[in-house]
Length: 222
Image (tube, rainbow, N blue to C red; front, side, top):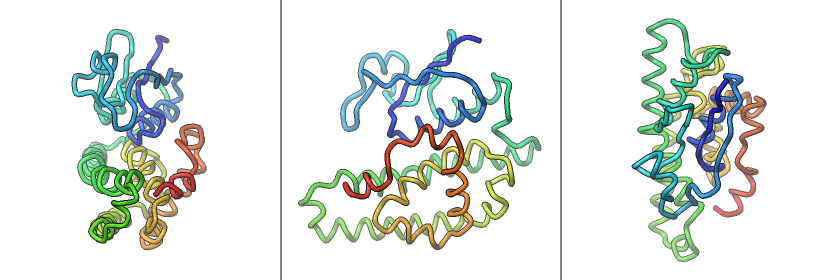
């Protein structure tokens, strides 16, 4: 089998999703991080050669170069043998695409871009600004509302019952960052099905070997 190369960053939630998909699919891959991109810096020429938008993750397999996380995960599932990363029934596949869209267009911006990243990278002046605290509190309330919509759909274990699928692989890494933030555990306490699913996620081999860093390390910087 030809080599699969994933270009990404260890702390990138979406890079982690692609690595989880490869591990769950039981395919070997090389994860390349050096000279690609660092947080807060411009993309390198090497990254721009693969993705003109300068974002990770990127998959390279033979002559195929592919970016955008959902497209990469679907390719991994379709191109290789191994456990399915999607439901089988067409109506459930359609709902899977729905949850992928929710994860990428709503949960990712709310949880990561507008809550976790500002909390982690805020300087002392920002932390002392009452307006910053108000914005973070409001964003926490918005995230809590999003997760309450999602929570009933995790009553069967994962979004599609016992099968761990691509949208779960997108959502769970976001939940890990959320839970490490001030107020995050309280938000998760209000969505017990999601909280249980996250505990199941932490117990998976794919989660353990891709864990970006200890949650308390993030908490100390937030």
